[in-house]
Image (cartoon, rainbow, N blue to C red; front, side, top):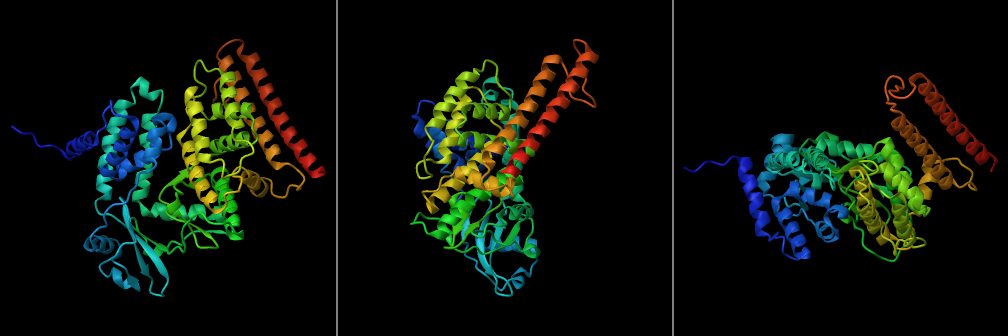
Length: 490
């Protein structure tokens, strides 16, 4: 007797059928398997497209061939029939939804796996675009996420896989990202959160969200002008836009802690005077510790400090320094890598391959970088492609200096070296924290309401540790004061 399949079982069976049909055989050449995986993920829909896009940022995990192929993932799909769009608009804005617009173009401007976009005008003639969610998007994505969570619980116990990838963390990030994209009110909130980071950059702008017409499944925004950035001879507007775009992204990632995480060329338009940042469905967030480590990594690479880069990489490692790590060998690899990129212009160095190279070095030494930093790296790599199309001669790392001068050390004398000062301060602070953590591990101390010591002479060691902590804190404050005095004298 045949047994009826549940929707989850039917979906799982379809996933297996699609993967097998695209020839993902272990004996096939790697490029063929990579292309087959990309085609399979495109066919399986938004959840798997998003998973592939995430994996495309981790060549250290999937290999360069797979990462390159997955980076080509598209989410273009056939448009919805007009009746389906009108049904969603009526459910979200009321049966008389057309009366809330001056005009509405039933022909979609673009169609994706989660939503499609239509041109319209408001009653006062303002030109807008209307993003309408596909009726089946939420059900399909939530069903796929449930299957992937089940897989993550089982796969997360396999030692060989967990050594390379925190499977449960990856799928948790995927779950959060897709649920956010399904709720357009969160995208509207992302516009509001990122808008302050664009303040002060006259070559950068973003559409205005019309809150009174937007819901969880409908988003109404001002129409962007221009078109995706194309290479051309740089003029003043293009050079300024390129420089400001990089500086703004350093500000988003290193200062604000919230950034547009999907700035691919289709999401950055240029109208001849200004760049428009579009589509805020995918947003990344970095807490203060991650921002500090990200700044250390960028500065260490920029200053060709292999020792500092190795130290920052180990501090950023999700699992800490792995057993058996040879720090000297890691530093030698990083020194050789940094030497390849010194003195190059943006047209000669792409940040994507740089981050890919650092990822390969980290993986080779068993160092696992956190997903948040990887996502920030992917965003910076995409932004550089746009900036290099605007101005091929711009040095991408010089924008760090502009960021520090404008956002970190505003008001510092021009003759001071803010980049060097901030780098040393961050290193001193990070090293102080690591020293205290090492002392705690060696003595058995553990954090709590007060410092508690379980081995050796408790009271004596506790007293000495407290004294050392105070001395280190005082030294850090004194160092900052002396640097401030030196800047003032300069």
